[in-house]
Amino acid sequence: MNKKMHEKIICAGFGGQGIMLMGKLLAEAGMREGYTVTWLPSYGAEVRGGTAHSMVHISCGKIAAPTILKPTTCIVMNKPSLIKFMERIEKGGLLIVNTSMVDQIIEKRSVRIVAIPLTELASELGNVKVANMIAVGAFIKLKKLFPLKNVLDELPKMLPSKKDLIAINKKAIKLGYDSV
Image 1 (cartoon, rainbow, N blue to C red):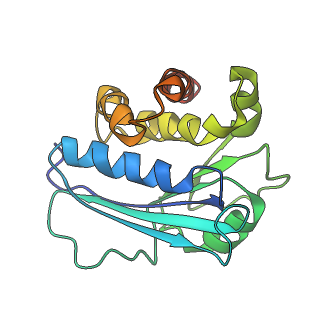
Image 2: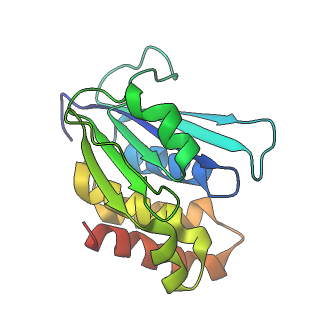
């Protein structure tokens, strides 16, 4: 465990892209590692098809509030989310962008930008809904907060009644991990 770590993550996209599951899975994996964690979901006017984001704090110390104004990492699954959150990322932060749904990324020198065609890769796996898990795998590899095994072990708890989806979600996480 990193004794000085305080990661502030915003996962954002349309409802139906698994934004809440992505944030919750990262939060659970952080708790498994022994970190203090908060997870705060936020839905737009409509759940499926509307905007959605979740905020996840993962820290070795106390967390004052679950809201995040300046994320250290932002995972954006679509263009409206990129527009909304890009300028908020802390200097030296990480931006993971789904280039399957974002046609142009404005370079920001103070932020590391990792562009991945998440939806396209998920389609190649056979299910576009696992694009979020590819993003999770990339995040795990890039940030090194906790072992990949933690996330893979937590996944069945997140999808307890969907055993048929666990295998493809695990493949997607591994694909994201191996693609960066």
